[in-house]
Image 1 (cartoon, rainbow, N blue to C red):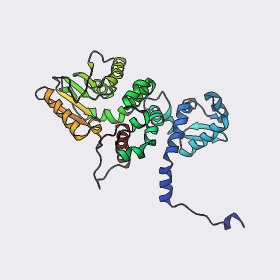
Image 2: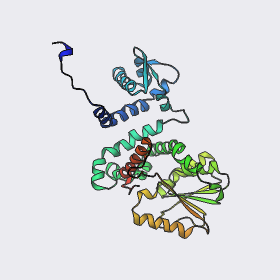
Image 3: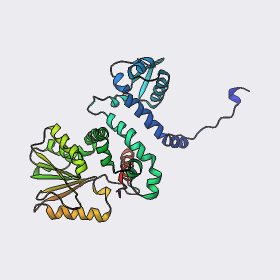
Image 4: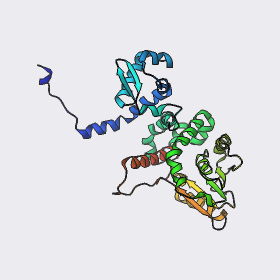
Length: 315
């Protein structure tokens, strides 16, 4: 019997699409491992053989060659001749020195989110924080215990600022305010985007004591210490008083309705006359609404990130 006589089962396009989704975790790990090894930086200027790459990063050559083939299948690398590999246009975004690099996001996904999503079934069953289950503590406390992970988170947020925060800052005139308070301001990425775009307002980053030190360091590093202060506290209890703008960016999503209402009332109570409370959030499309597929996926997956991190109420 020849090969042509052997019955073949052909996957339907729908099955192929579903299987690519099912094995998405493997795709993420292929890219993560290559990124952690620094493959993109080594291939920045010239193609390399698998043995040259293995020597440069200190790994097994045979295993790396198999990883490189997988990267070729994903379009991240190209095999330009037998066992000679180069970066594609997609792979270039894994280089560490590009201003639009996605390297930090790949690493944070592989080292933090990947673990949280591994517990997603239990998180969905319980509705409780995945971070408490995986790390035995809230995520921001984990950043304190593992400062190198906190630094990676800061880099990830700075990367995301380009397409998530800066458009929001550009869409609103913050120059009309004297003092802007970012409630739950985290590492200060949003406040830095506002201060860079508007020379007028003073800034205040307000967050829990376990969080604000990273904001202080980032603001100092960026050269904005004269225009921005960092205040530690709990928004459920009190807020800095007298500002004419209070921002809540992807903050209330982690609260239940009662806590969210309390924080909004606190903002109203302490803000100056004529002030404003501004919410910056992803907007979950309604059923049947026309929407860009990537935007829908990005919003839905971020919603689940919030669930996996702290059991947030979502959009």
